[in-house]
Length: 137
Ligand code: FES
Image 1 (cartoon, protein in one colour):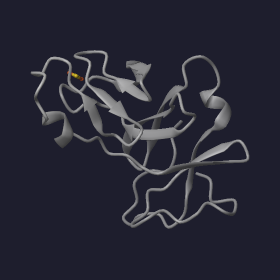
Image 2 (tube, protein in one colour; image 1 turned 135 degrees about the horizontal axis):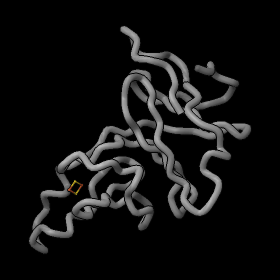
Image 3 (cartoon, rainbow, N blue to C red; image 1 turned 180 degrees about the vertical axis):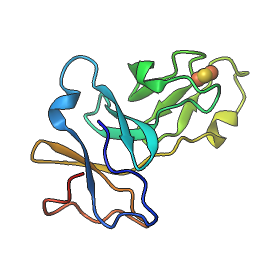
């Protein structure tokens, strides 16, 4: 789904980025283009939503093609794993005692679901509660 293009100022409302039904099926992972960014939206095994950068910070592989596992996405190229907050949680080819993965994080945005729609917060500061029907792109 492609939504609002990047504007000069950050939005002050939640923005609809998908329908809940977009994540139906055995592989709940979809690409999202929003605010001028390539992102990937997914629902993890706990039912929580993640909206993170689409391209792996290692060599740029497309995480939309990643393995959906362990409450996150595993890069299809070298196996780095990212959780719903964009944090790298594993780097399989690094030495066992390496902590480099702790310094790696993809962009991520708060997401919320209401009435069959999924919204993202791209504004500044902490996301307010999603209580009323926000703007649609
Ligand atoms: S490109 Fe993603 S782990 Fe290498």
